[in-house]
Image (tube, rainbow, N blue to C red; front, top):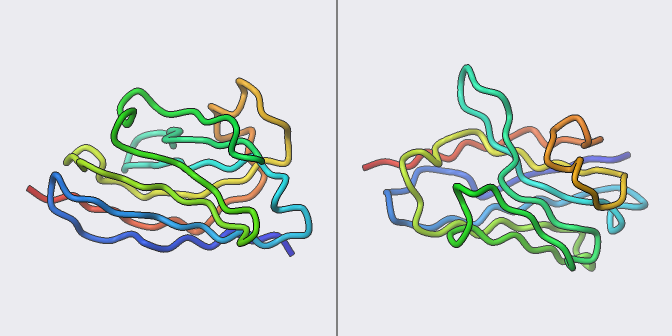
Amino acid sequence: QEQLVESGGGLVQAGGSLRLSCVASGRTASTWTMAWFRQTPGKERELVSAISWNGGRTRYADSVKGRFTISRDNAKNTVYLEMNSLKLEDTAVYYCAASIYSWGSYHDTSSSYTYWGQGTQITVSS
């Protein structure tokens, strides 16, 4: 059964760092395009970063470029999001997502993703 389980969220001061992990379960998990989205109350879920099945392609929201790094370890079926220089506006629920479709421009949108994690809260304080 396909499943995504996130970990690593929490409370951090502005300027600090956190690393999120997402373990994927599923026979074809290593072939999935993976991503991290985030959502705040009253707003749509937005793409933070995405990575192709072999890690060869990545995409970042402009707001996190240079601060966040996405990576994956297919031997562990795990995708990571390293977050540095965190800002107050990074506060959100972060979701891991998996798409069964090959890498494409449509992976900017949440509707392109097949499986979702339960979400993990990140709160950045001043």
